[in-house]
Image (cartoon, rainbow, N blue to C red; front, top):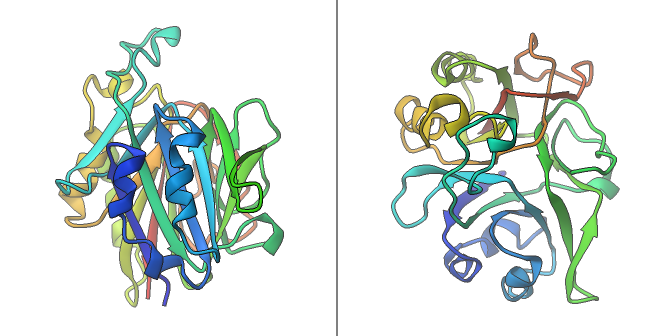
Length: 267
């Protein structure tokens, strides 16, 4: 059975409290979404993980997650981010959101039913549909032989087939979109996590305050953890297409000024 585990931590050092070993000891992907840190800050943690795990890292414009210490759904955006387009700008902060997905695969394993894609700004983006994700500043993969994170042109995480993924792209308030995916969820599955990939011109630059979308998840889906990042281009199906089991016919489109929501449901 697929396991998804995710949490938000203040620093890379705090990742030592993230119980990932049982999740990825037989293979899987550990995704680190970073705000305010450099790859070297994560090396010690990466060395401590099972050799079967693939460890991926993205430098983000902002991050979303469920705080390990409080259980509260939060978001943090780079100080001033968005002012270049006339927004009020992010309030700053640092942290790392970690997501461990058992059974997930990366590029060399070939196609997958649904793909979490993080593109590196200015680089050709990884391919795969249907998809959810977005454009980050830069991306890396942990190389055990080199004992360091090596740059990549982007990240593609193929989710295992037993995860049913509901996708919705929205440009307004979060509640109707989240409620739509909640009502359509397969009855034989439970919701393990919600992934949110909003444009960085949303968040405080759209709502006028932080945490609106993470709080909507907490309100509509109590106890379900959140993970994601603020994007400079959001990746998901065409805006008019939503639901579960979309299939390869739903192209992986790049959007602007929207949020891509993904419901990850497991048996």
